[in-house]
Length: 310
Image (cartoon, rainbow, N blue to C red; front, side, top):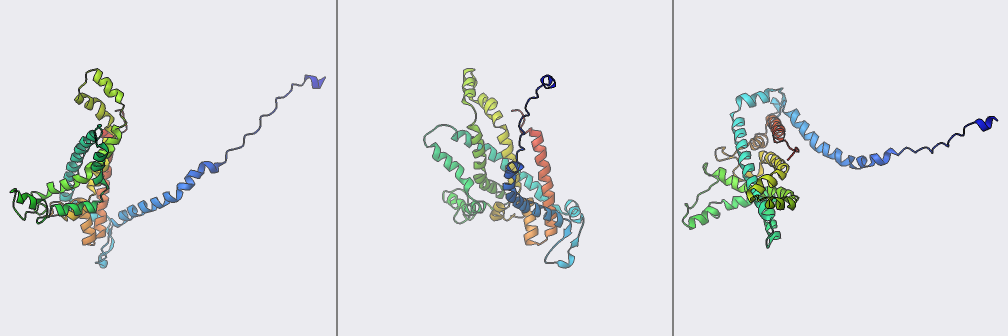
C-alpha cells in the first residue's frame, strides 16, 4: 500500500518568535537625552572656538571684525613673543607640579595604606584639601602669604627674614610660593587614586617575596610599582592637563605677575579674551593649546604603553 510505504515526516519545530528590538534599544533610548545634552554642551563651545579662531572678533572694535583666515595663527607663531614665553612657563609649571604631586602623593598613599591607630582620621586629613574649591584654595593662600598677617610676619617675629616681605611680589620667590600653594590641593588627588589601587594588591605577593628574602625596597620596585603603573600613568596625564589649564589659582595669587613671571598660556588666553576683548585671537590661542595637549597626550600614552603588560 502507498500509505504504508510512505515515510512518516517528523513534526516541524515550533517557530521562534523574534526578540523584540525595543528591549535592546531601551538603554540607549534612556540615555539619549543626557547624551544629547552633553554633546551640545561640549560640541557647541568647541566648534565655536574653531570658528572664531578664523575670525577677527573684538566687540569693542566691530569695524575690524570679519574673516581672518589663518592670520591669527600666523601672528601666534611669528609675531607674538608672549605666546612662546607663556608656553615655556606652562611646560615648566606642569613638569614641576605634576612631578612633586606624584612624589608626595605616592608617599602619602603608602603611609595611609598601613595599619595604625587613627588611620581613618589620617586619611580624612590627607584627602580633605581635594574637597576645597580652587578659588577658596587661592583665597586661603593669599591670606597665608599676606605680608602683614601671613607667614612672613610670624617668621619675622622669630627673627627669620624681614617685616613686610611679600613672596608673591618677588620674582625670586613667587614661583616656589605658587608651587607650594598648588601642591596643597593637588597632592591628595594622587594619594586617593594610588591608595585605591594599592588596596587591590594581593598580600600573598608580599608574603611570597618575604619568604624569598626580598627586602622592602625590592618589594616596592618589583611588586608595588608595576601594579601601580596604569594608575600612575592615568593620574599624571589627567593632572598634567588640569595643571596646564590652571587659571584660578595663579590668577588669584599673582595675576600672572610680577612682570609676567607666572603667566601660563591659559592665563594669557584669559587676559586676551576677558581684558583685551580680542576673542578671535584668544580662540586661535585656545585652538593651538588644544592641539598641543592632544598631541602630547597621545605621545605620552604611546610611550608609556598604557594598558599594556605590567
